[in-house]
Image (cartoon, rainbow, N blue to C red):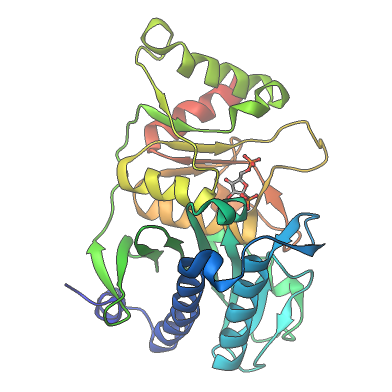
Length: 323
Ligand code: FDP
């Protein structure tokens, strides 16, 4: 089986980016170990503080954030870090070539139930003009990502990653600590009969989304002419992994619970990396009103609606926004 290094070299990845990715993955291996220890590590449950998004932080969120921050800021490859768990950008090496954004532990409500969680990351070039603690340098559209992916802490620890030459899946071989290529150039099936959305929010969606999901639920009696099944892991990283592996659509649309929030999921460290992976795997990635990767960010913690998955299904969903 091919090792990660070999695949990255074949994909024409520059040496410094390979070294950055290896550093990032060293941190993820440690997180994977902590996660697998579960209650034994005494790390489950909530801390007493809330993060910048006003959400209660889990101890594992804090621990994962610290592990990533420490190892990446000491590596020398990174000029600045932006994290879901940090209010502000963290300045690192002024000569570092890259900016990295991450959600240290996505799906943190799954930590206490021993269910799927993961680390999501996005890497961009650091502009030379920027001061390391300047957040404006991060405000580049997702099309500027040079690498993106996630590490899924499940029954096995898996890495999904793209550097712009296809999306590849790797599995951590815990006997020697290396990531081995287990699915090369993943292709998301164009069509699907599976969808993932939190239907408890249905009454809050825009009419176009209500209509789209109503048509899916109508099955072969409705305008879509086929029956759909529903799956919801409740951790974006788990839902997107399933969609990458066997197709489907994952949606977290805008809703009017908090009308001034443009969505729930965060652009820089959730939507953009997943959109890059999805497009590189032949899938679609839209906000409903445009390509996710072309959204011009205005804030490092910006939120955005997401429709991700099988190309034909994303297109079908987007067509409801045009009516
Ligand atoms: P979580 O709040 O548990 O961290 O990142 C946000 C996220 O999880 C996604 O992983 C997940 O898809 C979504 O929120 C679930 O949100 P709902 O509880 O609103 O369905």
